[in-house]
Length: 533
Ligand code: G4P
Image (cartoon, rainbow, N blue to C red; front, side):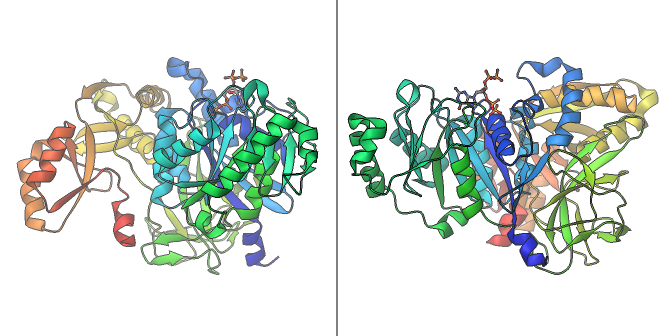
């Protein structure tokens, strides 16, 4: 098969949601439709329980499971679907943000009773930054929830995106009868069924016909006609280009738990979702059809077996064909590497593959060569941009509790931060290590893993920082002056970039006022933004 054909049949995407909206359930149902799993319940174990903040065995177990479910690939109607798993737990938000750089589109799951929640907003901000196309699935329609028009208004308002419903609910909760698929002119009648996946939709060519009354009753039929009229009046027809540019999100209603509306979602998804896209590199846009192979690492799982210190680097292929046992260039360290056992993640089986194509994610066994964001090429020296570091929200100073193990501690914290568990900032004088995360859970994970994998003991001392900001300037002298004056609040990130550790929102905004030539960035992605502007 030609490389264009291979690209054309792939869809690589992520499912995002606020915890509990139904991401795991929907993922599972998609796998069920794709024949990748036979029973419900197989993906469920991937969830970090909300109460598990101190249950380290649980965390360890989850790390093991999440390798298997980090990427779930299956075939559906001649399309190869690659679902990239994004942890729902908010303390792992960084991991989710990074994974979003490796997808070409997302499905956003919303709970019909809760609407847009805090985590939804954050995740969508990341999608908006790179214009990732979004399809919305409003879930749990079998339960009482909010009015559909209200939900759509809220989506537009809070997520800053236009919406276009492609299906419309008939009733909700107790009165839920199903959905009318406006896209195809079909009626999908609800029947609470958690396992049955083969149900035919009823074709309704003309909504005004009495046929509709026969199925849903005169009252609901009249209401549906009125609402569909309103929808068609208020929302423009879906323009697929607009969706692909991330300007408008098609919306579906359903109930993942009941397998309801999932197949329509999947069918429309394979029809309109983007095929693998190119990525911006420092040398320009790398197109998937470029003949030479390239890809980037967006996730690393390390030390799954502490005895072997093995790591798996997850690489998203951007262009060309990847081949087993061929030498590739690791741009950052200018070294040639080849891989004897690259793995794919078809239907949850890890198996060694001989070749892979743009859009695919492969697992590369690694002995410590990779960091998150690394680029692999067929020889050229370029770097993919835009694996963002976000400003952490919690900062703590790492203190060594066992002076005999200083080296181990150093190595451990370097490796864990390479893996993306947390961010490391070095502060002078004294090379003090400030660890920044988005959640408390990470500190427990770090302490636990340093002890078990590196035999190092540490404690954390809380620091009162509000944000870590990267800086760019139009006036080098002003930046120099700032760095001198605020020396006590300056640290450097792992790449040596200076970072301002602002103690409060107020201090940050006064710095912005006093030093107008400096821009303070809350994500390291400013480099990509600059390149795009
Ligand atoms: P998440 O991954 O987004 O965190 O959500 P998850 O799929 O785990 O779903 C959260 C809860 O919502 C689960 O219940 C799940 O069964 C339920 N749920 C998902 N989709 C639907 C739906 O369409 N209708 C209804 N009524 N419920 C739905 P739980 O009690 O937390 O877990 P479990 O005991 O059922 O496993």
